[in-house]
Length: 163
Image 1 (tube, one colour):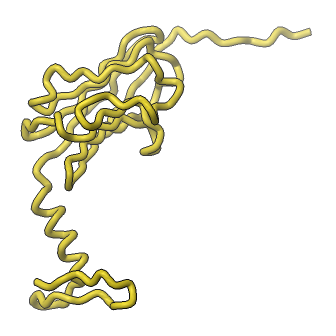
Image 2 (cartoon, rainbow, N blue to C red; image 1 turned 90 degrees about the vertical axis):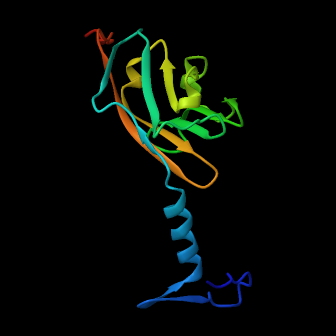
């Protein structure tokens, strides 16, 4: 189509596509995303319910079945930086993991070559209740799924005594 300008002083060049002009950078980005959108990520369609102190297994998989061995996998809470567990370069990465998850997570990789990767979390705490995101990222594309972990009681509450 056309070359992308590398000079910040130049305006982006345009590619002629019927019936409109599209900036080259946007066109190349669209082609990259469109041509590489080869998988979707799926989690359960219902909340996972686990008692306090129990073990939660949060399932997540690629469709169609695709090996995730060379992908980056990230489980996180509300923000991308709130890392529950991360896998990259063929191994678990604990550097950016949130402190409250240290020693409590395990990525189940037995079926990673078929795109099935679950996160084991134990022992479950009341603070684990909420939404989790499972993200798979290849070299040029990423996709994510959301799932809900519901933590059931008994919860221990401290009731202040009245003086």
